[in-house]
Image (cartoon, rainbow, N blue to C red; front, side, top):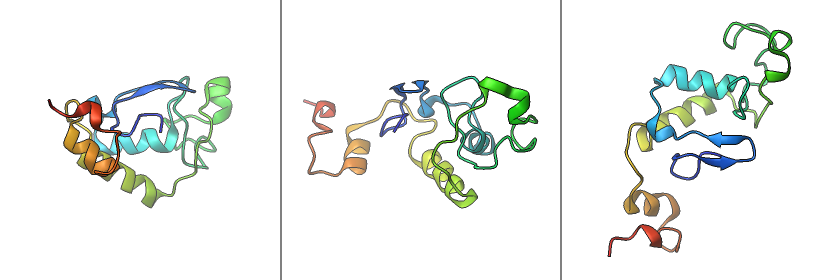
Length: 119
């Protein structure tokens, strides 16, 4: 939602969601960001135990204080792994999204992709 359908990033309720298509993170680092969020930004954590101990960036919620990420939708380790694998297969390291990617995501029966059609 925050990063848009194609992971290109967008302005959202939590701030500026970065483009995941341009990330320099590897899969392990990417999974850590999903689990732990990003302190001081709008990126929430998705591990319900994040910051209960030093599993996230070596700090606790008490040590971070007001900059601790909010808890977003809880995701299991298996779900986080699936999200990472999906994004690396479909978006990470790719350039601008294409009409074909749009149709693959939304289906051919939508007008969502019409602006991307080549004339």
